[in-house]
Length: 157
Image (cartoon, rainbow, N blue to C red; front, top):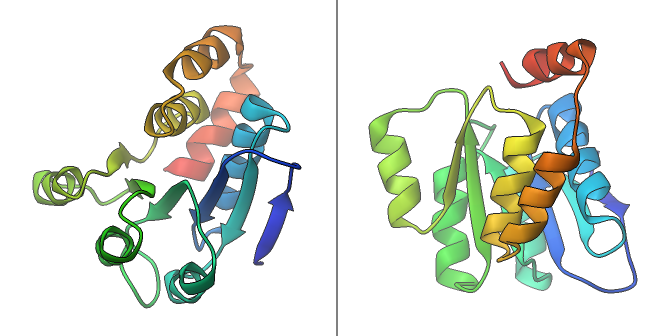
């Protein structure tokens, strides 16, 4: 599934690149819930398709998984740094290592090691967009039930 999932009239553009649809949808819903109608959140399931979109579209934040068919998340971030250096990035991975984290940080990317909570994700996105206070407010305002935590664990483990 590719396309715009939530499109406000104005605001920042966020692209989530994740080949696991359930994970991508959960991340999208968390951002939409946190930012309301202030930002546009898109999902793209493949890094190669995302690279094509980046030729013609500008995004303020790109969130990408590291391990995907075709291009790795780190390679995608390197491309973004060369072509759109103002675009912020976050690398997510379940297969983290100090080397991968170091490479992501050297590229100026945020780094999230799976499993992580949706609150951690939203806070990281706000931080990368320069909206630190909104991330804290969202985190304080969210209360999760045990079933929601279980769903998060299943999505991000």
